[in-house]
Image 1 (cartoon, protein in one colour):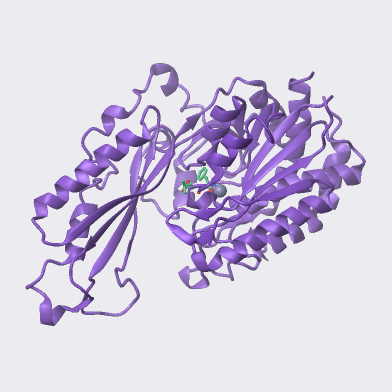
Image 2 (image 1 turned 90 degrees about the horizontal axis):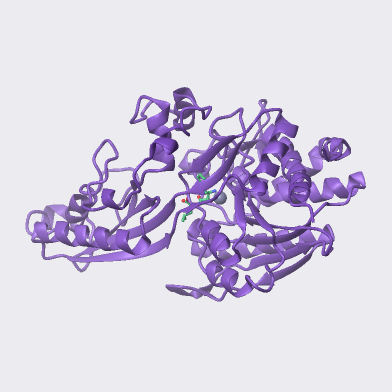
Length: 475
Ligand code: BES
Ligand code: ZN
């Protein structure tokens, strides 16, 4: 059993330093989906590179070129970093992202989203706290605590931290492919900390994510926004057409109404069905995460299956919809509806897109509208499932037991991390998701937070994992 106590002690004594590190990171609004925030995403990349250099690592800020369909914008750099280069040690590849979802106080945050704010329950609020700045910094904290404790890291680290994950990881697949036999060649296993525990008490190891096919439908007609009193009743209205199309995708119970989608889904086997009952998760965990009791299913097994192994379709918003408060008697001239399908084995990206497009075309044709409709594929990333019996997982389970005193749940995630599959396929190495945050953290939502306990114990966990994985993969 690795000697970890001096490391754990050091993590505890560096707690305030680590929180300060997260505070600085949260203060940089690195929102990848907003063009005008791009300089902040770049700033965040440089800040992170400086942190790694200060710890003695080497870093390249790899430029990824222009952003597709936004040719005036450079993609934020991807950090390719190394810490340690000892041929007698195994090498672990760490991936994470330093970009965040949008956030504005006016969305309903109780505090400024870009000022880390700690409440009396030791919850640290701020955009990116749990997704994914806290976990990324957890790795740096682990390095620092080892240094200060005078303990050598038992593995070499290769790091790949990107700034475009929340936008479909644009540009990264090519880099991973190009570097698989170069920069990433020494990697023995991959570890990603970018998801969440199922509840609030028990850690989990995650061996699958759903894919995400993201689409938009644009409907336009009139040359400009019109007065609804002057023109209402005399023109086909883009919003009316779009709402009809958007309304045809899914029923109120979440059933996808696009013909052929269900046939692409791998049937549930008995062995697989047996995996769900032992998972420690309750309907009240779900309701706590939802902040309501609006769950579709009344039991944990069905809820979990629909998160982990069935597809879902969500409607995300309508651009041009005049959604700000106040009665406005306008006919919007052009509206863009956005939606996505979370995909699972054995759904292929292109098969899903073909069915969705066919459905959209048919629904629009039914309307006999003179407006113009354009269907767009925004981004697509495929699902990933890994072999959880690999030593990479055994090591992580031992680390969880050591730090938290429990056996982790084995889970698949409903969310998506597009590059998990790319790493698995291009490097041919086992990929593990080792989360730090909990189900109530509110990633992508208002009042996103990371509990101090998850951050500090999570830092211990990441460091402990490196020791156990070195042991499991002993050369
Ligand atoms: N950290 C999440 C991934 C995640 C979410 C894992 C929920 C497990 C549960 C990540 O930052 C994310 O949100 N990814 C996007 C990817 C998409 C844009 C392709 C997502 O899932 O929406
Ligand atoms: Zn994330």
